[in-house]
Amino acid sequence: MNAVIALCHFCEQHGPSVMFCTEKGGLPPQKETNLDALPEVSSSQEIPLGTSYPDSVMSADFSRPCSRQNSVNKSSLCQACRSLPDGHKGFISYDGKTEEVFVSSQHPQNPNVFGKVRQACVRSVSSEVCPGREGPIFYGDENEGYVLSYTFPIKDSLARGFKRQYSIIVVMMDRIYLIQSWPFLVECISKIIAYFQKCAVSVYNNEHAECPQRNTRLKSSLSKTVTPQNFRSNRSSHSNARALVELTGDEKLYSYLHSSFTWLIRACKLRWKENVIYNPPTLEKLSLDENDQTIASSIESGFKFLSLRHMREVLQPPRFRAIVWHLLIGNQVIWHGLQSAVISAIHTLKNILPKGCANIAEWTTTIPTDKNLIGMPCLLSFKNVRTKDYVIVEVLWKNGIEFKWNSSCVIPEKGPSLLEKLEVALANENLSNEVVLQCLLCLKQEWINKTEILRKFVTDKRNKDDTTDLLQNCLFCNDDDVKMMKFWLTSS
Image (tube, rainbow, N blue to C red; front, side, top):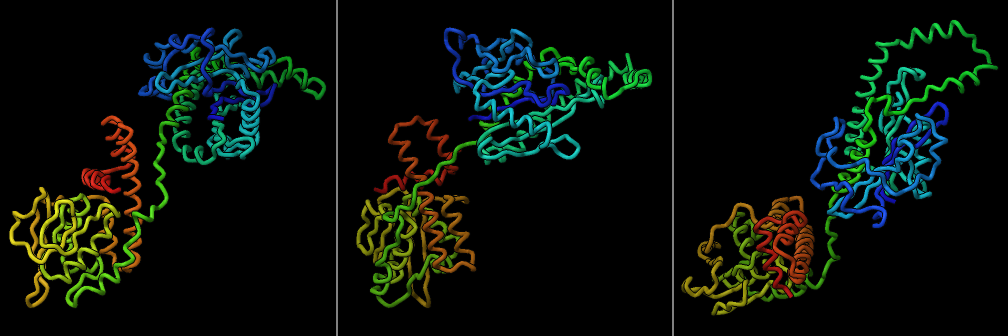
């Protein structure tokens, strides 16, 4: 069951009644209704709720009757309970982009839906009301559906107390969706109600100026004696039921209400966007090298990097950030000099990348082109570097550990999101090294999943606009994130 929006009324003669409802319907039969002739609802069109009819809305023929029959006999309804005149079967609008049809009529056609809307109506205008009998309220259950009900009075010079009680209800089965949409729905419905009340006050003031009802009723009550015997007959013979169109003075009121309810159903749905649910962890790509401790213990005695945090402290954050930036987007990171420091740096940094992206040459005298994390005894000239972008770190031991480094490009101020969050974790002294490693695993998992989604788009040969929309609006990637993901796509 999709959302149904209905206008309800508490009639003095018939009690709670559903006057007008809008719902999403199926496609009308081609023989009875031509889709091309239906008024189309533009996705960019916004109905200015609570105002008079704009030309853009009224230019469409919203009074075209739909092909449905009401499930309740209209002859049994009084003027106050009835919305559409005899022979008028309802309103229908067609959304050409989503191929959805929206239908408004006196009552829903589906018996199940009618039962839920009817039950919601009874509670809306009788028991489930706010203090002061005006305002929004939420109620319902999983069997009968959940309801947002907004009760409000309309001025009527002939009614008892000079007002009649109405409500607008939104009925749906999804409780979470309705609660999350509460602020939006309440704001829009309040604008519709404000328009109704503004029109009704204007009519009420005009009628009161011509014939003040308060004085007339006082004179009538003094001239007639009401007894238990004639109370019921007097009440039934002097019906003051009036249609809502008459109370507001707007002959096209239900055309406006159909436009507003239709826009509200569509706009409420368009407010929400489906987020990508990422895959479960892929341990083959995520797990840290179990042999790291064995490898570290086999390194010759000397200076070693003990962790990412230790490396960041020794190198200083700007230099550490530059090295990790090169590593994440696939540039070559070359270390040379003191062997213990070089090998420990390589095994510390490789855990930042997924398995398959960390192509390591632990200790070599040449620079292989297919490796991106390289350790060397020495580097005689930068001309030996065969890739376009790289960073070279030289480790020296004189009076203490010293570093010299050279980068082939300028490091941007804002790098990949993974790097930003990793630095936040490393800078937080309240987090232990073990916790930082778990944070790194979570960050890798997040971006591995995003890379897999991008891989699916690439293999499906989606167009450039679709891919750009995916990266910007769904995966929330900046330029460096895109560079990193393109490199991670090379992981097998």
